[in-house]
Length: 368
Figure (cartoon, rainbow, N blue to C red):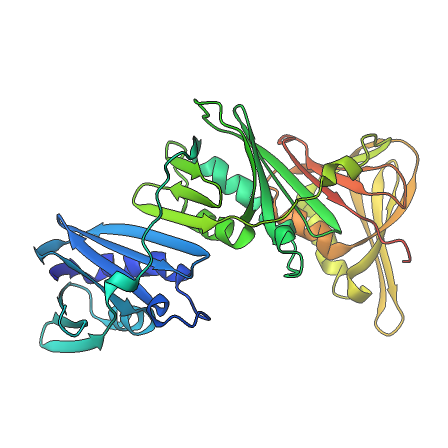
C-alpha cells in the first residue's frame, strides 16, 4: 500500500474511528486501526468486538493495499505532523508502515490485516431510515437514564422498539425512566424490540450532523445494529436479556401539575445542590411557586422559590434527588416544562411542554 493523504483529513479520519479501539482486549490486533486503500479512498476501521466504527476519506492511491497499525502511536504521531500532505507506504513482508513528509520519516510496526475482524453482512436485516437530528434527539433523551450495573447488562442499554413509522427508546436504572419517540421511514413495515448499548448510541450521536436533510440508514439483525451515516458506519452488538416493561408501573393519572420555566428551575436546583446533603431536596408545590428547601446540619440550609406559570390540584410536598431532576433539565431544550405528581410517595413525571413525545419519570425520596 502506498498513498498520499493530507494531514488534516487523516487526523479527522483517525479521530472518528479511534473511539472504538479496544483498550482492554487481549487480542493485540484489536489495539490497532485497520487501513485499506482502494480507488482513491482510504478506509479506516476500529473495533473492540462490541462496537465498530468505519470511516472513509479521499486520498491518492499509488499502490492499493491494507494494513493494521497501532492506534496509539499512529494517532498521536499524525496529530503532531505539520499540516500538509504526507505519504504512507506499507510493507506486506513485515507489516510495517513508513510515514514521510518534508524531510521527516517514521516507521511504525503493525499487524497483518487478515486477523482483523471484517464488517458482518446485513442479509435479512430489518431496515429503516431516520433523520440525523431525530436519531441524535432520541439518543440524547434516553442514554443518560440508562443504568451502569454490569450485573444487569440489559439495563445499561436503551430499549428500541420500531412499530410502523415510530421508533421508541426507553432507558431506566431503576430510579428513573426516560422515554422518547421519533418518526422514521419504515417502508417495509418492519417491527422489532432490541436493546442497544448506551455507549454505542452516545458514539453514534457524536458522529451525527446538525443538517436536517441528512438521513441515516439503519439495519437490525439478530444480534447487531448498523448505522450508515454516509461516510461513516457504526456497528454495535445488541445486548441480551429481557427488558422490563417499566412503563406499565408508571402512574397514568397526575392530578397535581405545575408548569414553569426550565432555566429558572434548573439554576435554582443547581445552587441547592451546593449545600443539600447528597443532593436531597424537598419541593413544595403551590399555586404561585415551587419552594425548594433542604437542611444539611453540618453545612447549612437551602431555600429558594421559583414562580410557576400554571398550577393544577392541591398543594404537595415531595422530595427528590436533585441530580435526577437536573439530568432531565440538561437534555431538554424547551423553555417550559411540566412537573406532574400523583402523591408524595409515587413516581412523578416531567415533560417538555411542546415536545410531548419525551417523558421522564423519577421516583421521589421517601425518607427525606
